Image (cartoon, helix red, strand yellow):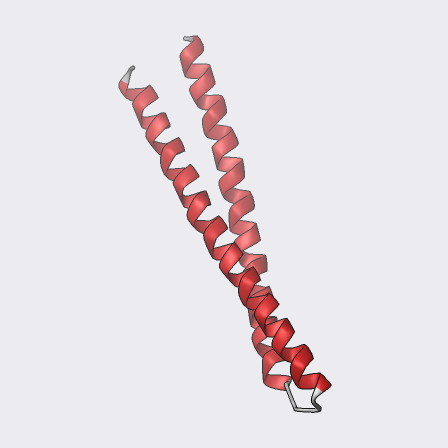
Length: 91
């Protein structure tokens, strides 16, 4: 393999690894949201105030939106790197 191919391959590997880490973060936040939603339901059923949970859930949702945007960027980068790698292999 040429140094250019190695470079693209390494970039692709690192981007895929970053995507996997990001996916893990997304899953953790989704799990947190489910737990908070269950707790919110329990508190509402018992008549307890749970406004603080709504604020925490809102923060989680905002973070999720940011992570989804990052994920979209990483997926686009992966596709672009695959194209570059494919073009280099044709040469």
